Image 1 (cartoon, rainbow, N blue to C red):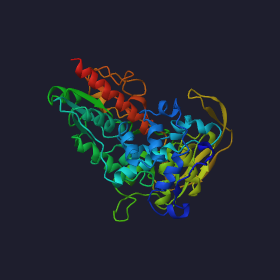
Image 2 (cartoon, rainbow, N blue to C red; image 1 turned 180 degrees about the horizontal axis):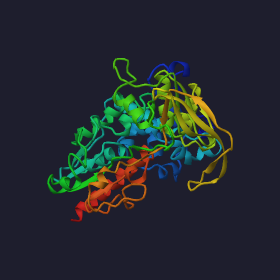
Image 3 (cartoon, rainbow, N blue to C red; image 1 turned 120 degrees about the horizontal axis):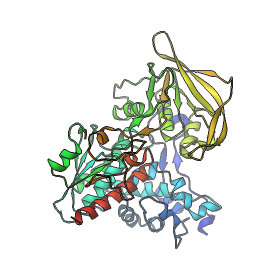
Image 4 (cartoon, rainbow, N blue to C red; image 1 turned 90 degrees about the vertical axis):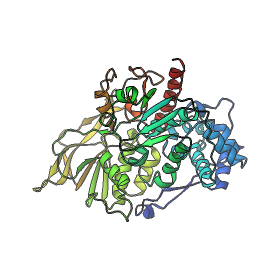
Length: 461
């Protein structure tokens, strides 16, 4: 019986080895391992995994093809639904989405859908397979702002059905958070990200970097002067949040966004680059999400002894379980039920310590998680040279402030309907810029919905 076969766990670099390099932690499946894991799938008649995938990949079909050793057919199936399968197979929270709804997971371990998606995407790339098909050009032009997962997906879907699509990216490299936010040891840039973006170019998507919408062009100029027929905003949520406690202006305090951008785009992980990035001997990361894990594990690889400070317990950690396990294996210290109240500097203005208080958990807050309650007289200091704030992000207000008639909410997110339409005719948005910081796959789902809505809008005119 398929459900009696134990889950095949992908091989990984040893923790003591991997903390000294930025090579990918997981080696992924071999062909034999992938076929064995695929054979566990029950091929349900009503697959809940498909419904819980934001881009609705036909998961049972591609997995059944892997089990049959028909890798090309499996890759073709995935390509019908996803423009970024090698990315999603690595960084999507499958445990709370497709794998979280797998029937096998009720009594045993679910099918490793993410690892199988990664395998087939990598196999397709290594064998130079390309399933991209494009319809005849319809002459209509779409501007996509931002080259992250929402923008890339929207551009891909529109280009396939005949639109002329131009992506405008503010940075000098394409990929958005895939390029600047996720470390190399989780998502290789030259092999995985670059390949996925190259596929977009093959179906005619134009990409212009170093273009800041709201400065280089406004949305009005794109529509009225550059004659684009519609605009999609997929600029993400790149504005970091801080705690507003004393000492946040000291040297050695930075956001996780800044830290990871320097490490990724400025190649701090590559010994061939002379990149100025300071981690000191000790670093403290404040936060408990995936970005906090990424920042902590990056600082560790750059030579610091690292501690994570989080105000709830491990049960409430929002980071993926896999990332927490990897961080622990690598020797990162977790200070749970701990909240910073002040950052203390030395006479030269550099971070010396971070003062914290112990907490307990009270009643649930608006998110459903139990709220931390400070324990009186529980202050203590942690010595550190660097403090990295990983407390979440919000959308950059530039586009909203330079576009007439664009409604935003109290969180500075662009207001959209269920299909990505904004309050401005011809302007659509999706991903983190509309929801606040979320996941790659949710942004992709939003980009796909918006592409469908754009096509409908332009065909009704």
